[in-house]
Amino acid sequence: MTDEQLLDGAIEPQRNRRLFGHREAETYLARSYNSGKGHHAILLEGAAGIGKATLAFRFANHILHFPHAGDAPDHLIEPDHDAPLTRQIIAGASHDLLHLKRPIDQKTGKLRTAITVEEVRRAGHFLSQTSGTGNWRIVIVDSADDLNRSAANAILKILEEPPKNAMFLLISHTPGRLLPTIRSRCLPLRLRPLAPDDLIAALSALGLSVEGQDMERVTALAGGSVAEALKLLNYGGLDIIDAYDQALQSSSAEARLVMHKLADTLSKRENETIFAFLIGHVDGDIKLRARNAALSGDLDLAERLAGLSSRIASDTAEADAYNLDRRQLVLDLLSRLRSTLQPQPHTA
Picture (tube, rainbow, N blue to C red):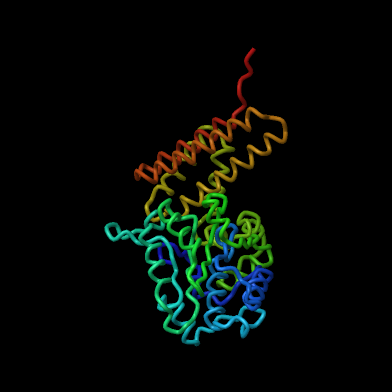
C-alpha cells in the first residue's frame, strides 16, 4: 500500500500485527491450509476498511513460515517483526510474495485508476519462476475491484491453470462487480463489518481513544469499518456530515451559505479523501431514503431518488475522468438533492 492509499492514523496491512473481529475466518483459513485441501484462490469479500488486506498478509505470513501444510498449527501465527521472513514481507522484498495493486503513473506521480494488464503480466512472470526456497508463491490482489477488463481477463487465465504451489488471495469490496468467471474459480470468504466493541478495540490499537457521544456517532456512522472511522475522526468527517445535514434541513438562504462553504472545502486538492467520503455518504443516504420511501408507499419519491443516485454516480465519474471542477459538482449534487426532497406539486 502506498502512502497515497494509506489513511492518516492507519497501519499498512503488511505491518499490522493486530486483527480484530475475524477470529472465525482466521481459524477457517488455518485449518483449511493445515488439512492440505486448501483452495488455490481465495476471494476475501467485505466492506472496505474492515481488515481484509491485513488478514491476507497474516495468512500469507503463516503459509510462508510453514511451507509444509501438515506442519502448520491450526491457528494463524502472530506476525513476528523480528523474524527475517516477516521483515522481508513488510519491506516488499519477499521472493515468494507479490502484492499486486494499482501502480504509480510515472508521468503524474499519482496512482493509476486501475490495476493494469502489465501488472498482471508481472504476476505471471513471478509465478513462472521457481521459488528459491521451494516455498509457496503467493499473489495478493489488492483489490480485485481495481482490475481493468484486460487485467481481469489476464488474471482469469492464470486462475484457470494455476502453477503448482501458487496461491491467490484476492480482496474485493464489491465482489458482484467482478467477472463471474473469476468468482467461480475462487473460494469466497465473506468478512463481516466489525462489531462496535471490535471497532473500538481496533481504533484503540491505533492510538485513538474517543469517548461518549462522539464514539457513539463514530460506531453508528462507520458501518464497522476502521477506514471509515478514521475518516470521521482524522479527516473531519463528523463535521462534514453535520454540514451536509444542515445543507438539507436549513432554509434556502442559510443552506446556500453552508453549501458554498462545504463545496469550497471539498474542492481543495488536499481534501480528496474527504471529498470521496462525502460522495460515499451521500450515495448511502440517498439509497436509504429511497428504500424508506418505497417501504412507506411513496414510490414517486423512491423513483426520483434512485434516478438521482445514478446521476450522481455518472457525474462523479465524469468529473474524475476529466478533472472537472469539484466545487460545482458538490453544489449541483446538494442542490439536486434538496430539490428532490421538496414536496412535489399535485397535478389535477
